[in-house]
Length: 463
Ligand code: NDP
Ligand code: 2IT
Image (cartoon, rainbow, N blue to C red; front, top):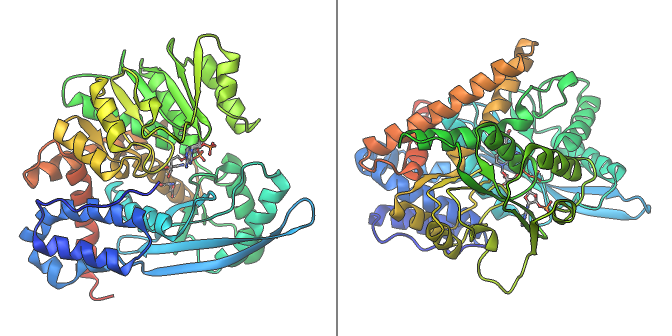
């Protein structure tokens, strides 16, 4: 689902030309064009006040990966057939720390998608308060329907090339769509075999071999903490709020778990086949069933509707120009599946149904026209690079624990995560106010994330 980009008529000619050049330089990468347009529109306000960034070509340099590695991944399936996929790692920006960001294994993966993710990661990581640069990688390999052995052979082959480019002080990958604990385990095992080094080169590791407590929960928990902070600005809480959640993977699962702990009522979940609407609310027993279904049995969300009474499953209907999941009465929405899952029409439906809090667990789940509708409506709209930063922030905490060769308790990591989400919220609020757009978390996140990276680049000279 690519979103055609139109630049806002409100921006300066400088910004319009800049976006035009980036689009021309990166043909066929609509998701990257979209992410860049959103960020540079926000930065229009900064470039007027800080002309030194313009002459140092900071915006142009930030849009250009420091390094892009693309490689062949050959592996053998269970029938003995040879298979070939494409692997990639984009090392986007290392101004404030080693490259850091997830790996995505999904058939839709291409250069434009990885570049948008790597670009977003730079600003997100800057917002976390921790010293991490930005990167992203992955493959068009589809883990769905593959045996554990096939996944292992693929991961080993992927690492046979990637190992020479990464390291605990160079580039530290982690999970994303299609890459969870199982895949990180296989990747780590192969890295260790090739390098003969036990180091914190990946995050999201198992608990008894260097992983951090709360890392699996962190993205979903963080997105809910961020929503709670936004509601706090209006003197409200999540208690009693009806919430629409999409996806049913890592982020969606722990979003639902934290919503339940805070007294909210999640009513939807989805996967690539369709979505369930559970009017009575997804409770902890149903969540447990769903987590077993998805993480152990690797089944489909439809099974949830078959298992529990009063639940409606709606399959994806490609003829519809909207997603019916976003067309239910609710207070809050937590898109936690994938990019561009909320179109302009979906945004209209959400607003019409009373949704006034959107906290993005996924990366860039809302199209540009959807974003503009949320901003015009002045709802509490937390963009992904702020709202879902808890995942990578806790990866940063895993790196710290690995360097110190100790591990913190669950309570300690959760408290740090919570503190970081509050700090991110505060920086967004302060940056949006400082640039005259109070309450606009998109400007707040883009500006606060950018300034730290830009100043570091200014300090470090023309590299
Ligand atoms: P998972 O692979 O665990 O789950 C992804 C979920 O989204 C699945 O339910 C999947 O359904 C659904 N999905 C994926 N792609 C599509 C698609 N093209 N159309 C419809 N449904 C789709 O991934 P995560 O939960 O880790 O990631 C979800 C989102 O959160 C992504 O945008 C990711 O970039 C973002 N994110 C993840 C972080 C993390 O720590 N894991 C951190 C920050 C952001 P199905 O199984 O049928 O494919
Ligand atoms: O998009 C993301 O922030 C992630 N997939 C997590 C990255 C990480 O390094 O933990």
